[in-house]
Length: 180
Image (cartoon, rainbow, N blue to C red; front, top):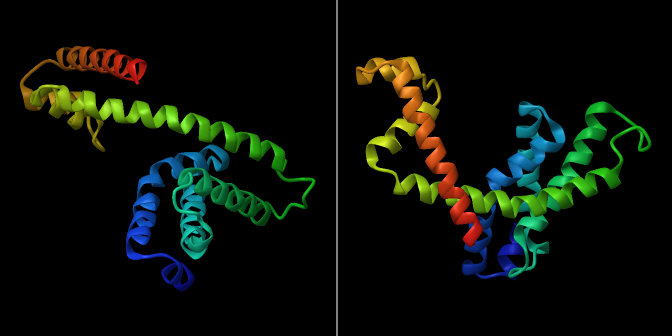
């Protein structure tokens, strides 16, 4: 990345690093939507990140980083498909279709980012006990029966409480995204 370091100062470099970190979840989802295999998604994401770093000097600061990163990811998906399936150009997924999917995914990314941020705000607004209940339920291995046993409650009661919390979160997210 020496060309990037020579071309831009520390502030722009730090912003670039932050941009890469901030777009990881979205890139992962985007790549998965095109690849549909978890292991392959991880490989393509890793290659995409490598290319983003390698081509950092081609990014114009102040422009849409996510759009640029999605374009790099799109090209990496196409290269992956061509290599993996050893297909000639007419046989693999039409590049126009991938282009259309990329555009649609970029448009949807803003919407889902807005909803994700609203969810985070709504979760923080929950009382600690309810936020902890949601956190425990959706943590890896989170099980209503185990939670009920720990709380000394019936599993049906815990499920009903979680249902009410999810309903309140959906309502909160809807309110936050309508006003945004």
